[in-house]
Every structure is written in structure tokens, then in C-alpha cells.
Amino acid sequence: MSAVTATSVAVGRGAAPVLTGVELTVHAGERIALVGGNGSGKTTLLRALAGIDRPHAGTIAWAGGALPPGPARAATVGVVFQGEPPSRFDVRTLVGLGLALDGPLSPSARRTADAALAAAGLAGLAERACASLSGGEAQRALLARALVAGPRLLLLDEPTNHLDPARQAALLDELDRLRGTVAVVIATHDLGLAATCDRVALLAGGRIAALGPATDVLTPTRLAAALGVAVRRIDDPAGGPPLVRVTGVAPGGAP
Amino acid sequence: MSRTAVPLLAVAVAALAAVAVCAGPAGWRWPWAWDAIVVDLRAPRVVLAGVVGAALAVAGVAMQAVLHNDLAEPYLLGLSGGASTGAVLALAAGGVPAGAGAAAGALGASALVRALARGPFDPTRLILAGVAVGAVCSSVTGLAIALAPPERLLRSATFWLFGGLGAPPWPVVAAPAAILVAATAWLRARAERLDRLSLGADVAAALGVDVARVRRGVLVAAIGLTAVTVAAAGLIGFVGLIAPHAARRWVGAPVRRCLPVAALGGAALVIAADLAARTAAAPREVPVGLVTALVGGPFFLLQLRRGVTA
Image (cartoon, rainbow over all chains, first blue to last red; front, side, top):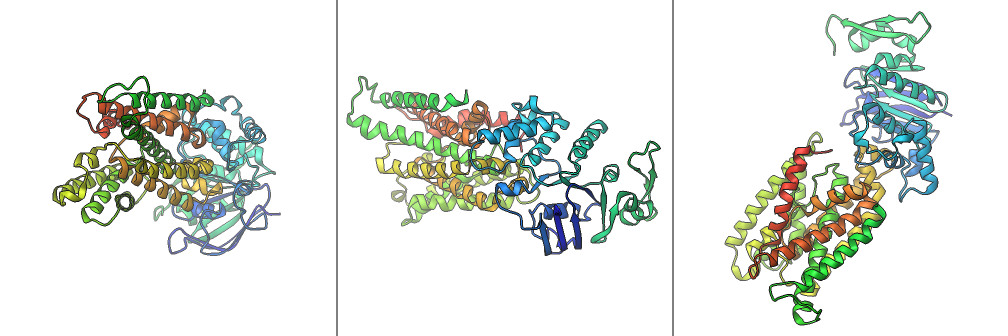
């Protein structure tokens, strides 16, 4: 069963939709990148897939149905937003809140939270204040919060923003760990990250301009048309994912 | 340590209350005597001080969670000032109970602050708007008091601008106590939802919180708590800032743990402030809000220096 399916969806935060005619099925366990310029609707679509904003038109189905209320919702879809400030809680409390329970953590819920902390490599930091974590640790804690309830769908908004290359690599390891079990949708400007995804949706002109394997979508022609930049592919001779480098602004300028 | 905080504080509040009942300008009442001075003057005053302190602290905890802003509290966000203005205008106009006027004033102030702080989320701007609205409210209150027929006001400008507990009849203590109990119970039942809300509205929505509904409830609770305390004890500032901060330091930020500790801490703070207010310069009495401001003002500056945390 698909993790989430959008059918004829129109989304936008104002009165007019930013994106229309969105047809997107995220299969179980796959990783999809949403790529596009500023204002192309990446975050807006992500918010709709998280069930935060209702689409203007069309329907979204999570695991074949509507988004359940309360704790079951956290067990359906997990989200990490861009630039979430550090919370005032300790790490275990933050991750425990991801279970969306009303009431103090039961012993079994606490074990679930501790297991998520251990999986994120944060077992030793459970009692630490979130504000005292390094950038990489803070992001792992936010990921653990989004995953603790065991959702089959994880939504990430610009997860590599402000991460140095080592932390970006660590994030990729985390995402690789989820491959096959948790479907991940990433809104990103980071073409290198997009290139690691199974499929890429290129958003331009108020619609999904292209959707397919990274190698088919992240082509110089398509990117130049959608983003207004000239890019060059650097294929790794060792067989890794294709890297994409922005080499300059195309004539006519970036949008 | 956090498990012992509530019993420890409860004992401390009880002991402080006992000292406060025994002490006063009419002399130290010991051995204990249930005479008229204790039963009719000091006891209701001390109980009201405790209730007012707890109510302001509870409002602070809730507002700080919902607004993702550690400086949010009834006084700094202008709610107390609005309540005071509303109460004075109600009394000056006549025929409207002070409590209803206070509630309307707090509601108006909150709407004004929200309108002023509209736009991209900025914790500093929210506080700035609150302080500005509070300042305008103070001048309207002063003006209303200066122009109103004196026989209608019953209470001095000092009371409405700097607080005062006086010698409240027991029924005056009952209303804030009832609102305090109801609001605390409502908030405690939603403690984890408030925790999730403090992570941000979008995160909370993704974690199954009905954000609009909880926010509305907290606004109603904060306005109710502020209105009823201002109507009974005038304008007392900074309690909603100091008590929740101290509570978070002690037992951590989760609302379930921090709410009772903040409430007891707020009670202790106002009981102690009132004790100081009526004994330090006896037989003259200093307004209790001046004492809390003397402690709270520097505390606020310290927090500002550390940076407004979102």
C-alpha cells in the first residue's frame, strides 16, 4: 500500500493555489525529493502531505485513508520542519512528545522513546537539555521525535540546511537506515541530496513539471528550465549517486 | 528532586502563610489566637495573596507554552493593564461589576497586542507590543480615576496601578480561588498538548493537537485568571514571569511537572511580597505590586540580556 497518495490536489497557503493538478503516489519505503525554486510550492505541498493545511482541491489519502486524530496520527506521518528552534525540554521528553500521548509517559512509552533514542545514537544524551545539543545531535533528536511513533511516512523540510558536509553525510546514513521501511519525502534545494532519492519531483510553473528517477529528472535541460540555472552532472566513477553541481546562472537569470 | 518539589513547596507556603497571619502592624499574634484580626483581616488577605500569586503563575506557564515565548505573562503582555483599565472604567461608568469590566479589558488588550504583533513570528515584538499596550492602559486607568466621580471608585489609583490586597471579605477570595482551581484543572488535563504546542504550532498540529482549540482555551483561561486577580487585588506584575522560570529550573519544562510548582511558587512569592509590603514600613503600607516589580524588573532585564527564547 502506498504511504500517501495525492489525487488532483491543489495547494496554497493563500486564496490562490501555488500548485495544481498534483498527482503523487509515495510508495512504501521509497525516498522522494521535492525540488524547485523558492515559492514553487515545495513546503506547501509538504504541509499538505503532513495534513496541516487542507488542499484547495483534490484528495490526499494516507495509507489508503484519512489521517486519524491524536496518537494514531503520529503513527501515520512524522514531520521535521525547517529551522525548528531547540525546545526547552530534555532529549527524552522531546522524543516522548513525538508519541502524541495525553498524560505522562507510561513505562512502555518510555521504553519506546528510549529505543528511538538508541536507534538515533542519542542514548547517552537522554537527560541532556535540547538547547545544549550540537546542530547534528539536535537534528537527530528531531528525527527521533518524528520517528518514535513508528510512522510509515516521514516528511522533511530542508533537512540539510545549515549542516556541514560531515553532518549531511550523517543525515544520509540515517535516511539510508530507513530505506525500505519508512517512506521519506524531502523538500530541498540540495540537489546532491535529491540525487540520492529514488524519485525526484521537480516543481515549476505551478505544477509537478517532472517526476521520475533522479537520473531522469535532475538533467541539465530540465533543471535549467525549472530553476533557471546551468548545472553539470558529475558522475562518481565508483558508482555512487550522480552529483549535481550548479555551475552558473543561466542567461535570463534565476527566478 | 522533582518529586519532592511539590510537598516541599506546599510546606513552605503553609509555613510562610502562618508567619504572614501572625505578623502585622497590629503586632505579632502569638500564641495563635483566632481573634477578629486574624480571622477577618489577616487570614483572608494571606489566602488571597496565595490565590493571586498562584493564578498569575498558572497563567504565565500556559501563555509561555502556547506563545513559544518565555517572557509571556499577564503583566508583560498587557492583559493585567487591560483588566485594570476595564475594571476602573466599569466602576466609573457604574452598574457594571468590576470583574466583568476586567475580563472585557483583558480581552481587548489581548486583541490589541495580537493585532500589533501580527506578521512573521517574533517573540521580541510580541513583548514590545504587550509592554506598549500596558503603558497605554496605565495612563487610561490614571485618567479615568482622575476624572471619575470619586464616590464610585471606592479604591485608590495606587490599587489599580500597583496592586493591593487590603482586607478582603471572604467572598472576594472565593471567586479567584474557584477560577484558579478550574483553570488549573483544565490546563493540567491538557499538559502534554501544551508541551507539544510549545514546540511550535505546526509541529503540534502534526502531533495531533487541535491548535486553534487549545489556544482559545488558554486565552480564555489567561483572561479569566488575570481578570479575577486584578479585580480582587489590583495590578501585580512579574509573578507570571518569575514563578514559571524558577519552576522550570527546578523540575524541568514539562507542564505537568512545572504547573503545580509554579503555582505554589507564585503563591509563596505574593504572600512574601505582601508580608514585606505591610511590615517593612509599618504602620504605612507599600503597594504589593511595587514589591513584586522591585524583584521582577531586574529579573526581566536579566532574561532580556540572556536573549528572548522562542
